[in-house]
Length: 127
Image (cartoon, rainbow, N blue to C red; front, side, top):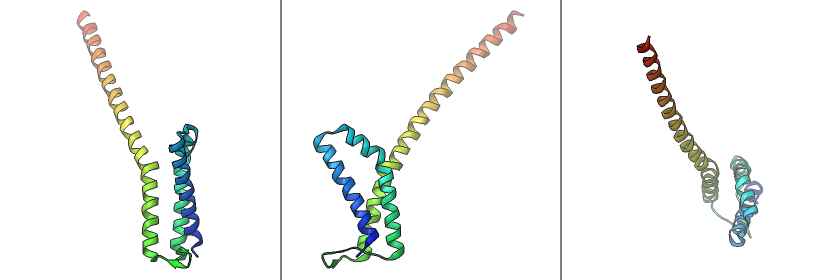
């Protein structure tokens, strides 16, 4: 039986169940907790997936073993989705926000430079 892959799927299943509970009960505290620890959850799951790939340890359920490649493909897709949803997409949003803020700061600095240039040219003309 696939020890590492079973642990990974158990972690993801527990996270999924808690996520659905938070949606149906509209529990904001649980939802915030899940959002805060989602990246950690998927990183731990990914580490178990890597161990399962290294040890060539597929999961057997009730005596039936799915093809190993299919198990790993599904595991990689779920882990990739978790990485995108909880790390890459928020990172992209932060970069967009920072880019917008830097643009605003740059415009502010350009206005200050223009004002300073006007003040300096007025001071030079007065002398």
